[in-house]
Length: 434
Length: 95
Image (cartoon, rainbow over all chains, first blue to last red; front, side, top):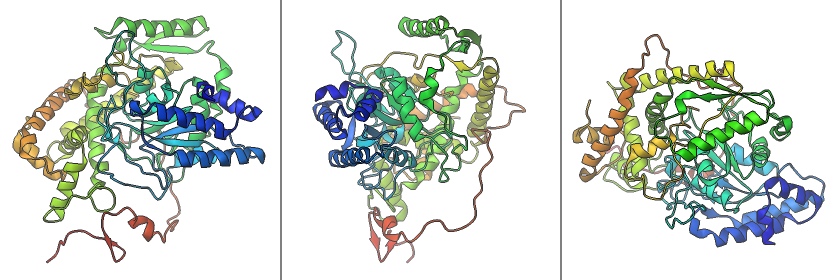
């Protein structure tokens, strides 16, 4: 039943409820699609046995009248979420063989609601990257490419495996994480829907940390409805994450029917950049036109510190990363490379375990936090961050939502930007502020 | 403020990464380009601006100071590259 992978998650849910097919059939169809699409490199670990076991349990639960909101729906998980008893890599060599003895809160919520795990998805190492080319397990290829072009294109990053798997119909939906654009940018590059919810909406417990004040879990779907359904299960207060928000989770799916009539949609003038490709500008304008036609009001707004967000981000995120990644020392889990003493064991383990981009960011972060430079870099960046947040607070006094392009360029070819860190960083210019 | 090879060696040691000699020069170049690009932050007037310390305006929650978990030695050691006698094992640090 290959047609089953063509369904949206909402349609699959309704088909399961109507008894048109079983969770087992739906899962088998996706496992077959995954096997056919291995050339994309979307998965690091496929879990077919676990998937069939969970699908069987879902069919049994439905027969017993105990179907949860995601009962029997096969999805895939970015390999940054710890999954009990299943290899979890963060796309890094340094976590070699790490098998968590616990389950992240977000994935536990998904299994509670009946979802089926297909496997763990490829990503940039420790979620640091915008093209999924920094993974120890190799790059992910975008299932799409421009007509007539024979080159391979990147799916964006860091959640490149998630984006590619959903775009290629290998999973009905996938989890991702977004620190400076790692869900929104790959969703834009693959024609999927991606949402980074407000910080605190999803628990970060059990998600391997990159930059804790920015990391947030979210979801990829092929439709807005699909993303809304899955996010509803992922979100919620968690005592294990002191920054998780104590705010009731609304019914995101029900909210889709509200329409946008009377909505005030802000368009920030600073996002209109010199040299923006015509196709990006045209898509942005078309989005505004759709809102106008549906009865929303387009309001020009200003976010004056936009230009500085990226530079502030590339101090703050590496600073937090250098601290978070200090735990990988070859003692408690993962790779260990011997040395003549304890310190050299740490140093040998880390030089072999971390790839080039992670090393670069850990060094930048260490430098920015080191004695004599803390005020000039880290403190300055945190002050600029306050001003950026103030820009948004003031904008939201005048508008309900803000409409921007996600990326300054369309998807690029593999290898096109991998030699120049700053060219790669600039891809996040529109996503980093939020 | 420019980062030279010696500075790379110093911060690499602080970060406990044994960056080989041959990679120090190219890394110094990368770090300088990134830091020069970050210099643009100095164009922003941040006098009388407080640094951000909390992402969302929320108070940290408190919980009772009590044990909520435990007896998981086997779980804790399960992923250790080397464990002996119920402990993580590391190279000798005291003679």
